[in-house]
Length: 623
Image (tube, rainbow, N blue to C red; front, side):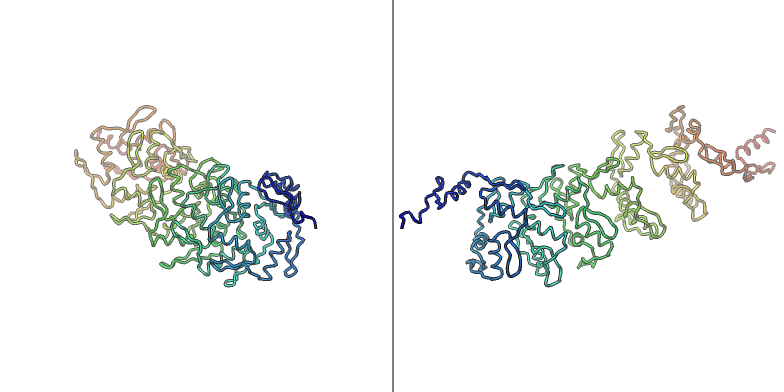
């Protein structure tokens, strides 16, 4: 028998490991040199050993030549079939000394033991993250390399893990092989079934070490931990925004791409998120499966119930780091933060205007489209916003749910109550930068600023006249339409403006609370007294920009301005003649009607105009 039989003559110079064959030593040395001379022709991936390359090629060919005799399942590798056979034999020879769990293979037990020891021997060279299993490290490395070697034959989508491809294929096949024994619900993935079972058992095995909160899935705990660490691993390549979860980044990217892959089968509306489609579906079904235990109110979404419960508890768990303000909902905090950052991520494609909220953009877009999807069931009027319809409905119901705590006055709008409260507080938060005048409301300041800028953005389509305020235009249009929607309950007289009706009511009440200190004359309105004072002071604050003539009242200036502009907005319906003042039209109409309302005291004749009566009296006086 030869003397050297059984020896391993081929030894590694670096680690001293010995091999019986030279090619085995050559392959081993690639571990030290990092050399990978075997390359995949399909994807270009490199390997240090030819057997490893051959096994890899089966991913592309999808060849599975090793088949189980019992269940018929196929495997690309022999060792995969060997592992699978242990499922049927149920041979569990390797037992954990700590928890008693049994395994069919020693390497499974070794991996399991790391749960108890916390050992993570496999470390990422790029980010330093550690893993308890080598294949977990291999999968993690694909985050850095962005490698996705597994491709779907139907839609072409690529995946970094084979299991992810298998799960994805069930979207196309509709296969759901995993069934819940309790409720019968089906799932395409086993881990989804496991998570679902915890709904029935209430099990939450994953606990946060910092705050003690428990979770039913490990992924939920991992996501939760990022709240404490502030870690945001996923970054948008377009705007640079970072996210703590990959699915949040995926959703965010759809803002830039405009992709809406989820479609409603009933109305065809599309959504960028699957949960948004699920929530939308409840509109058609009317289903509200989530009920409040305190007040019994039902909701179509669990999140809405959770938010609603905070009304009863008063809980506001979301806090602004800048100003300390608290919120009951996280999305309200996100929207609030944009006040500090000035961020307006939602932009109108038509006019370029930007908004801090997506629903604000949606409402704005209806200005361009003219869409008014919300209709009143009583009068048929349409609105572009649901809250405008809700406010309009209060005209029909007479509902005024907003009540002042000080004087008890009720309002149909919340903003009307807010404006009213400034009367009691006398608070004027909004200041004009030009003249320093203060206002209780922001829109009051906006209207005032147009005095300085001369801006008149509201135009009459009939005569072309412009106005600085929309309500002034609405009142002006009634000159053309002759509409007088405000009617006196006592005498039946109609008016085109509500404040004109209010002034008229004082005729019946005969209350004159405002008295002139100089001549003692009384007035039912404060502004009438202010106008009267100008008789004594000679003040004429309203000036014509063309000729410089001054007037004590603004309406006197308005009438005078028509001399320069030639405007004649008052038109006779019978002969078409136009007039610059309403009173002139009223006098003219008497030509057609034959009305003569003035009677001479001397000769008892009837006269149609007051000035003609004055002239006639002067004639008799001179005789």
